Structure formats: structure tokens, C-alpha cells
Image (cartoon, rainbow, N blue to C red):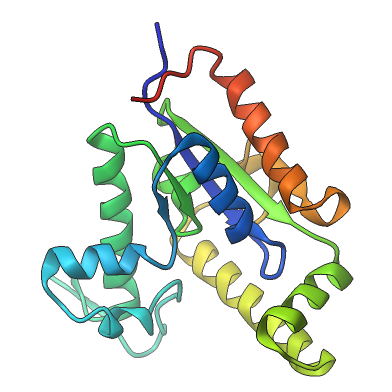
Length: 203
């Protein structure tokens, strides 16, 4: 029986090229990619201003400032995270195939037959050079941005998940993209998926 749904979850270290690789893989399989644009999709569906959501994206709740009352949480970080988790679950339940970057997708959709969970990491110096080039930063500022962003991603993931961010046991495939390049990493992922689902037939 043909495999008609494919969901690719990509976790990534900042500066590893994870988003770029996700773009390549999504293009190869002709799939929609959800990352920064996910909040735009949610905002459009709820007819709200996306700028009100972006500032809380991929952040854990601030522990001492919010509480839950009758099942409703006062933390915007938690509410927006749950909106994204619900969006991912709905797309998956509707049979949509897609690539999703971050957003705890490997745990949100854990056990789903169509899910392939991946993690992209990289060598420190290569990640730093990429960040310096992309954001036009000096060495010190790039280092600070990398550490801050990775810490935020780790705290966000570990707050909402029972598993640990970047732990290889949570993913089918973990790749250091610095060693072989971004295009080559994308090709390995594509080959892995084709072997994983030899009867893949996306409509």
C-alpha cells in the first residue's frame, strides 16, 4: 500500500542551516514548509495581527507571572505554543503532508505513521561564520546571538516536551551539516526518506 502522507519534522541548532535545509527538502518533495510563516497562517485563520504573536514565538512561559484558571492559561507564551501545536495536529489529522521546523513537532506528533523526525546540528566555528555572514555581526555579537538563541530554543523545547532538545534518541536521524554541506545534507535526508517510505506516493 502506497504511503500517501509525509510529515518531516526538523529540529535545529542556530546557525546550522536547518531552515535552509528544510527549504531544500520541502522543495524536493513539493511540500509546504511551516516555520516562521506558521504564525501567519494561524493569525489569518483567527483574524488577528500576526505581530501580536511573533514576540512570543518559541518561548517558554515566564514562571512567576502567569497561572492557569479553569483550564485557561494567562501566559501568552503558553497560549501561542498551544495554538501552534493544535495547528500541527490538525494539519496532520487532515492528512496533509508538510515540513515543519521546530515547534516541538517531533513530540507533538510522536507515534504518527507519516512522521520522520530529524535534527540538524553543526560545528561551532561553521555555525558562527554563518551567523556572522547572515546577520552582518562581529565575532562577539555572533557568539552571543548563537548562545542566546540556542538557549531559548532549548528552554522552549524542554518546557513543553518530556524529551530533551537535541537528544539523538528523540530523532530518526541527526546530521552535522557542517561536515558535508547543506545541499548534501538535504540529499541525505531525501534519500533516507525514500528508503524509509519506498512506496511514497504524494498526491
